[in-house]
Amino acid sequence: MIQTERIRDVIRYIKKFKGSTLVVRIDDDVVDSALFASHMHDLALVHETGIRLVIVPGAANHISRVLDSWQVEWKKVNGVRVTDEDGMNLINMAAFDVSNRIMTRLAAERLTAVIGNWVRARGRGVIDGVDYGSAGVVEKVFLTSLVATLEDGFIPIVPCVGWTATGRPYNISSTELAVEIAVALKADKLFFVGSGATISVDDYDMPKGAALSPEGRMAAVSVAEIPAFIALNREVNNPLCPTDELADLLERGGDACKRGVTRTHILDGDVDGVIPAEIFSDLGSGTMIYLDNYGSYRPMTRHDIPAVLSLMNPFVERGILLPRSEEELEATVADYLIYEIDGGVRACAALHGYPEGLAEIAGLAVDEAYNHMGIGPELMERLIAKAKESGYRGVFVLTTQAADWFERFGFKTAEIELLPAKRKEKWTKNRGSRLLIRNF
Image (tube, rainbow, N blue to C red; front, side, top):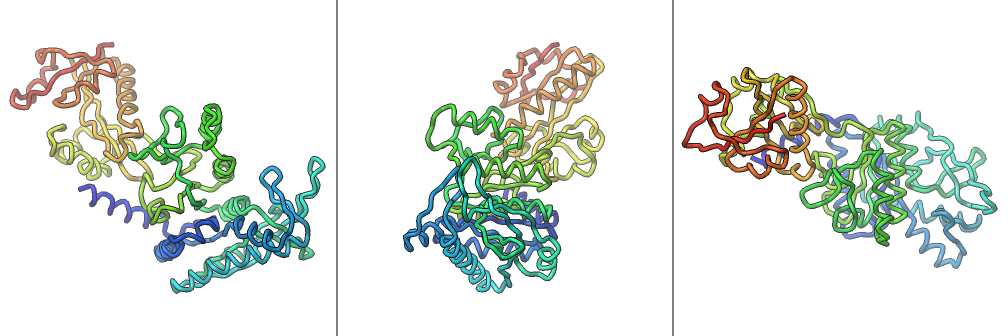
């Protein structure tokens, strides 16, 4: 059952993202890893689904090694590499070397990639008395030629070097470069793929209500929540959380979303298959940054009924929910509230009203993969609030296995005789459901 649903997810996402644009910033520590070929193979598979790719190679480690081997002095100031013009020649060589390795690997996948200059840069100049030398920033993305390359079926590879109008090169942060390209293209997704980039409860303190995967990874974070996450982890004085690099990725990823990129994703390149898993599943395999509308609560429609029945089925098989037919759901469709992520129904619950002044919360089901996200409690609170607004004097539930859970919301055990007459007709002694009521 779960396997079938995941296959449906993949098909749904293939349809959703066909023709979309994905910008991938991939660190050179991933390029140097044993999983490099596997990640390139995955990108080839992604490209075959109709997703357009732009790759921005990070070259920080390789640049450091080349500068050190030539004994060229360099330093980091506010996270920016500073060196002289001689150093820039070596930076240029190192950046293109990493880009060539990616192009070669894609050629092995029978894909045509092009390394090109689609970026105009300008120097950072002197800031607060510091001459940033060869360090530059993006001034302009040549969008027309970049789009033409994509439309011709090629994969653009953009090294972390930009040139001025007079041909002077500058070293550009690959993170900044990827953001600016994604914004210019209005990309659907921006990926930051780096080694050890998993954000999980094992290493970080999570804000209340954080969207977690079952294994404790932060599956998603809104732009508005990023400052609180960074501040929370800096307050606990844990040297691992967050690193300046992670804070920079979160902040720049959030900025990309605010400027029009649909979603930004931070992925751990030490995990095999992380790229397709992030694209073709709801909870993904990394951490997604979003501006809004990651998941939403809305009334159920008739179109949702097959998905809701599939969602309920495992709970029916375990005796937690009563079986419901398509006809029954159609008759009560207006009573249901669902939670969806990217068009996939992940939770549902209903509020059925009775003339005795009580309303029943029923049919509560949450996809087990999403239990850690607080969706069930949120559905309960929303339906309890709706019952109050509708003028009911209380709400009740019938349950065989979840009485303790409902007690958290103020429900108390009551006698079956207190059931509304119409609902009592359906209650059976064999099933033995317990009645719990919360009065307003």
